[in-house]
Length: 343
Image 1 (cartoon, rainbow, N blue to C red):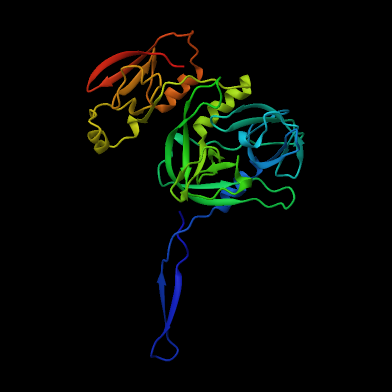
Image 2 (tube, rainbow, N blue to C red):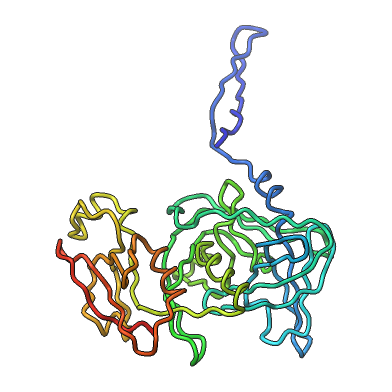
């Protein structure tokens, strides 16, 4: 980060015509304008109306595009179940009708399809699995088509975390998803817009549905881009998302410091897997012999090195009804296998 230009203080001396200049550094700053300029062309405004003409306005980003198709990722909260109209307002002031490809209410992600006759460049994607607590983050919205103005907010990532999301209906089970909590403001136009790192890469999609309140202080939530990519790709390919539910929350061993391993009574030579920090009540994991403190290392024949591996497995796993699933854990140096029934 470039240093802020030193502030100059002057003081007259007793000698006529002589001035002493004191240079002091009063703080540090970073230039956000470059990030905004880089990301602005890929950030759009999304408007929708339901059958009762109820309007909704927010943002979205260009996720994937080719010569004829442009896919927009946005917040599912902006799109009614049976939309009468969806419009995407690009940064070049052109607005196009959009088709809803699919929604995932658990992650608050929706995919729209438009067919622009101009070039559209997708937003650059970062890696939210590498985000650490305290990193700077930027949120922005598309430009309001009436005023030409957009919003930009700045803060830090308060916590990368997993969150248990209750089932949205009888056809879906609960889901554990990855989110980023940040201490930045989220104006209404920013819902569905990008959360960015200081390289101008998207690390999340801003959401109101995923937010939680901590006393009187409200943190803003974003669906982590690692989750967004998995969901968006499935929506584009299949129009819907199904995922199996195991019912554990954990941490990547590879991200833990030595003192953290010692505090959790983990062997220091264990460098891969997921240490289980919570087993959710009435979940498939709770009905098995899994314990908090176990290090999950494999599911069936698939090695699990981190939470990303487990997430990808659960999004693609399609066992037969009531089929047993073998989970391998490291428990105090012993390798143990259990049978679970993900749902």
